[in-house]
Length: 102
Image (cartoon, rainbow, N blue to C red; front, side, top):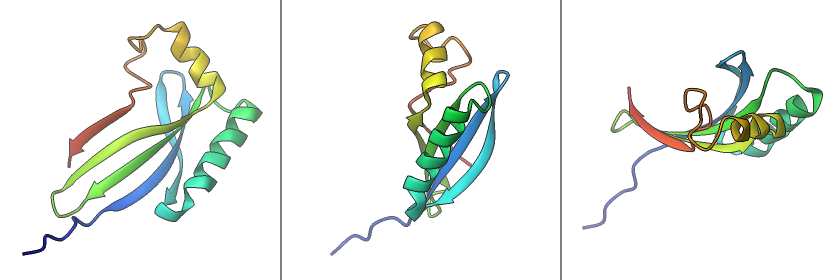
């Protein structure tokens, strides 16, 4: 008997660091990964916020679970992360990935 792959919904989210909080700036569909990264690079180059990152979120509606991964970190964000040390230092702002249930 063949097993079917779980349904997924993928989005790419661009976040700006405002103070110590990440704020959602824009959300892109699964086929717009390059656009999300281009937007983040542009925001980083213009110096918007204190940092910028792009998160990929894969949602599994059959299980009501999602996985997240940081797929881009702007230069300003990377410098901030290094200044805070390897443990993150700022509420784990640059965590690589995670899983959550809704």
